[in-house]
Image 1 (cartoon, helix red, strand yellow):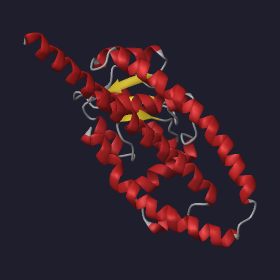
Image 2: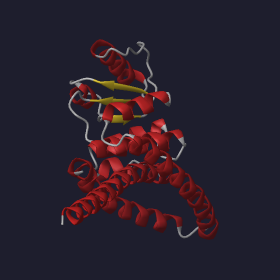
Image 3: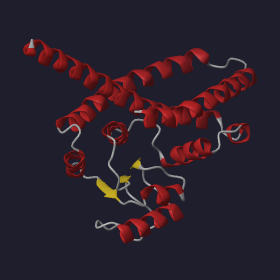
Length: 235
C-alpha cells in the first residue's frame, strides 16, 4: 500500500498549488463570464460520471475479489475480458525509457509504441506486432505483484473501458509530461481545457488508489473479525 500512496503524494501537492495559481489567473482574465451556465453543465457531467464510477467500482471489485491474492487467476480473468497482460523482469527499465510505469497502459503511438512492441515481443512469450501503435494492456515486472497495486490498476482498466474522461491519448501524454516534471513553465503552457482534462486524468488515478485503500481496510477488518472468532472459539 505504501508504494501506491507514495506515487501521488508529492505530485498532487505540487499540482494543487499550480492549479490554484492558474485558476486565479484564468478567473481574473475571464471576469466572470457565463458562470451559471458553466456551473449547470458541470453539475450534469459530474452526476453522470458519478454513476459510471459506481459501476466501475462494482466491476473492479468483482474482478479483484473473486481470487483476491491469487495473481495468476486474476490475470486470467483480465485476459478473458480481452486485454493482454505481459510480464518480464525488465518491465520497469523498459517502461522508464519511454516515461511509462508498470501496470495498466493506455494505447501508445509513434516511437514509444514501436519501442514497447519490440521489447515485449523480444522478451515475452505473447508477441506484439511491430506497429507504430499499441492497444491498451497490462505490463508488469517478473517479481511478485502486490495484490493491492494490481487492484488499483484493474480499477484504471475498467474506468478506461467504461470511457470515464482522462484516458484520451493527448490527455495522458500531457499528464505524463507534467508528472515527470511538474514545474510552473510546463503548467503555464496548458490551456483551460487542458487543465480540466488533466484534472480528470489525476482523478482517475486518485480513485484507483482510493479503491485499493478501501479493499485494504476491508481485508484488515475481516482479518480482525476472523481472529476474534478464532480466539472466542479457543476460549
